[in-house]
Image (cartoon, rainbow, N blue to C red; front, side, top):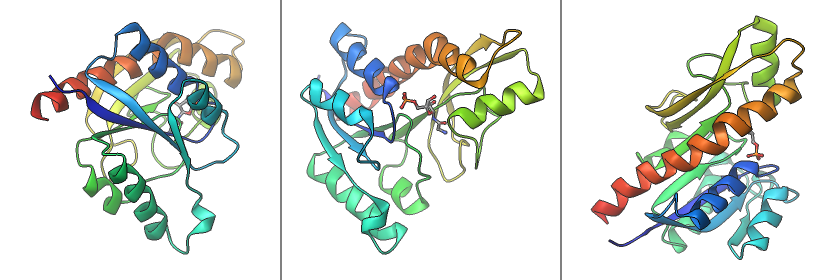
Length: 202
Ligand code: GAR
């Protein structure tokens, strides 16, 4: 079967990107190839991770474009040039519009660091999610991988994994535990699940 081409969109440290790269090397992801990494932040360490693994990297900055639509059009141009079949949002801190989503319907997945529908939607990203979980006082949190649709964090859930909250947790400690015990495991698994389906149709 023909492998599909995967693009990973990032904004920061890229530990989830690293988990995807490692999973491809380990054969956990075998229905697709990570062909391209796109960052909307030129200083993202994720770009170094891509470089170290000989994966093509591109930077697209919102401020270089007059409108969000122009920014997204540039992004789509890069993805089409690379013949990308599937997009993984791995810590990509920008909400994509219906225009972009329509171009890749059912082909975009995202990892969110909480058990959706808790602590999700607009404003819930990165450490803020863990701050909110600790403030609420939940005893269990986790991560969710879902399809991206027009509702922020509202698309169909693919995989979820629970992680316990412990006494004395700080947002940073909890974030790390959620990454280690959930995100880095379920993001590669969900990527393979979706890639396998898309590869069947390719
Ligand atoms: C991850 O925890 C990811 O789930 C979260 O940002 C972090 C990125 O870390 N994403 C969101 O909050 C999206 N709403 P990474 O760059 O090390 O993968």
